Length: 114
Length: 110
Image (cartoon, rainbow over all chains, first blue to last red; front, side):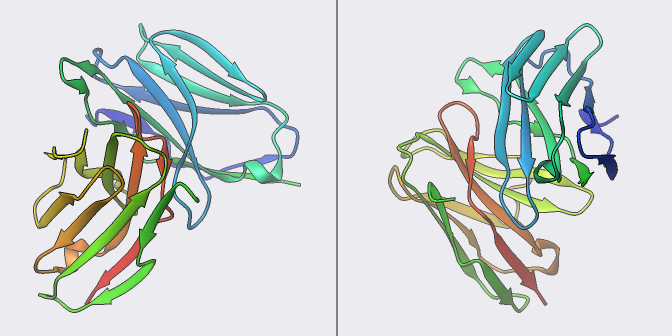
């Protein structure tokens, strides 16, 4: 089993829809959870950063972490064509000498159709 | 991405050739990272540097070397390029996590 699993999609939704993107993981020690957005032929950009369980909201984006189920989600409300990109989840744990390197999911490709 | 600059943007090499990928940041971050991204494999960490003067291996370090020249610059060297190293290479910086990525170097090895 891979440490982090993410459905590659592609996921196609109409403009204005609520989008749900998900990752599951196997290492219960993971504590930091991130979502990155990557446009075509660009580097990833950090979108959301959460610690442990719970929800975090930033504008149209909500990140949710359920540690008991080892499941994280990113919700996008009122989706726009400009949200069309690949979304990568990533996670790691805190070690004595700084954080351990991130483990990334393979990314979900999202298309929002006008 | 003005904060992290990677050069070159594209490169084609022959098997056995060497080259150095350059990365410079103006974010004043301690941590810098080198990743490769391949279809179906996602982002994989090659090497990282938690601070000036230190480097550590990531998930896929074989065939690569790195130099943290100063706080701003972190270079990745391929000593003898192999076709398996054809990939898109990303440099990143951050305080505790990689936050800012460059736009990548697309490297093809024939």
